[in-house]
Length: 295
Image (cartoon, rainbow, N blue to C red):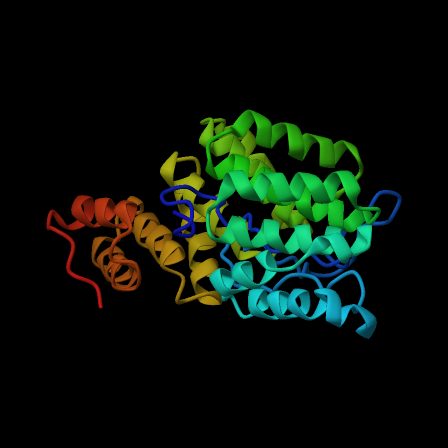
């Protein structure tokens, strides 16, 4: 499995984190960047760089008309205090803001609602940014977040529409392909999911989202048990505290006949995520026992 935000499915690390322009993101008309990607999407899950910096530092002149609250809300968001950030941002009076400042406010409101799983509210704010922002990269970030929401709410056709639109516009990123892979997997399009994860790894061979997602599907579908196990090991080597990756590795070991090792990895996964249903299900299959209580 991937990360707990999308239990039981590979590809979750298609995350909400806004992307930075740089390796791993190819803008229309630009050449592919060389070297590994620094795209945040791992899945998530995320444990990648936080959101991109605001479009520009808010001038001191607006601090008395809401700019101070906006900056505080952004600061809290970056600290992952999403509930407090949302409270702060919701108190900003956008009537005194310029269109650019209102776009910045809507952007962070949309991200806060996404992180708090208020998806209907998030869609409203993200649409507002897309329709009003002149910043091409910011629009890309919001469309990726829309696609993420559609994927995890199982509106996969809408997700595919947004992703295809980005792809046709000339945008490419590891995040784009891992999200497309997950959307394909949800619809049981195994070939499509495998192809998109391969593309993601072609862009960044060290991307753990793609490693884990591809490895999990390879063993789950019995396409290539040995390569799947190898990919799952690489993902755990890079992120040994990710319970989704530990679960994938345990399942890959089991599928390769390594029962004792599988049990060890599953025990670590369940200690970190004791309520995760798929980890519990894998534990029962591998051991024939009820899952132990996590820490």
